[in-house]
Length: 163
Image 1 (cartoon, one colour):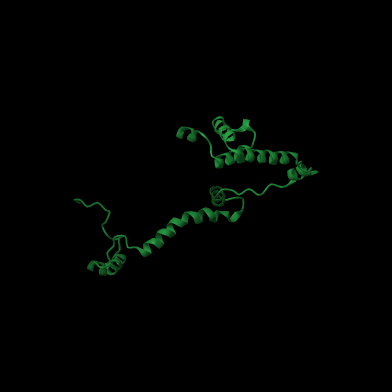
Image 2 (image 1 turned 90 degrees about the horizontal axis):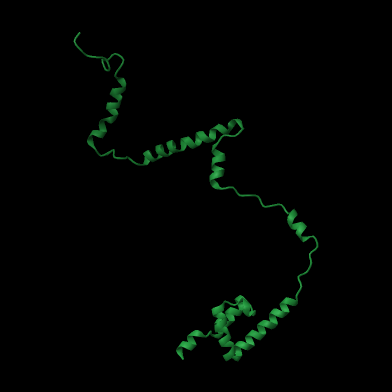
């Protein structure tokens, strides 16, 4: 008895089958058709449901769609919506200089962005330079002394040897 119940379809599944596939039995999948036939033989509710679905489909088949004169021509004459270009395409077009004389600033601006980012980043982070180091206090003096030194008169870069 359990096996027979597992093979049959309940009323909810049959209602779903009618809603999805309609009441034409040839449109039902073979396995579901067998289970639906068993349910139709055993259940008066299922037969009533099938008859009401057939009546509704018959009424729907009698309705004729109204004729809209010139509808196809109106639809074909409508302008298409403007195309939205991809972000990558718009960015490449913005970066490449066009025919305008002032368009050169765009690639220059894009090239300067990493530089500006690096300058801003270096202002916030020390990147390993310890400002608490006691030797750090003398950097200003050393840089000042280095700027006063005249390298042109020095022997840096000249060969030293036996003369």
